[in-house]
Image 1: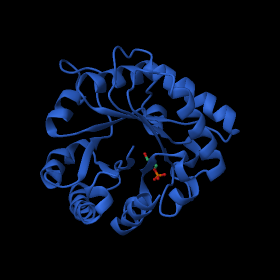
Image 2 (image 1 turned 45 degrees about the vertical axis):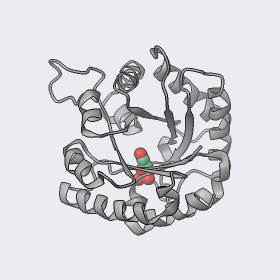
Image 3 (image 1 turned 30 degrees about the vertical axis):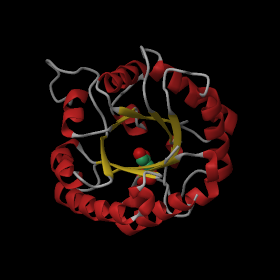
Length: 250
Ligand SMILES: O=C(CO)COP(=O)(O)O
């Protein structure tokens, strides 16, 4: 199974900086043989307003595209929402569902997240489902918490989902100085993988880590994770290049 590196730009970069960053990273992606041969998959999730221009830049490159959110509805009277149908038509392959910031700042609960996951499935988008405990607790409690979040999100799923990415992001490690400890991350991700192996609705599940991730982390996590979900520490394309090289080596 190939490794997955995703970068959510959140709302950090303005439109122009986003497009410049995407052009730089698309060039880096094309020069890395592991990305060219599919051993490492690389995706960027810019804000909605940049998606169309981003799709033009990434067309014909190995840099894939995703969105940071979607509506649980596909069309209709939903002011301000963005449908999975449009995201797919624009060329997105991935969509983030249930990021900690959406849960905490925008009131997304288990019902909304399950609806969004179902919308992703309906529209042929691969969900990047974000889960993670809010406070520092031990690995067993953290994994239990994440498994509850996953069960809630997959609850409404009808039929098969070709591909699911679980982004394990402990809330306390997002926006921090450093990622969660490697032992903790390894233990939680192993347990998530083991429990998900019994759920046959997603045909392929990958578990990645996010939360102050950057260069040097993959070597510590080893094969307990299938990749990383990056934020601030990928804003410098050269830092991301380093992470790609590390993902290619592991
Ligand atoms: O939330 C994250 C990715 O979705 C992580 O963000 P940071 O790496 O900036 O902490």
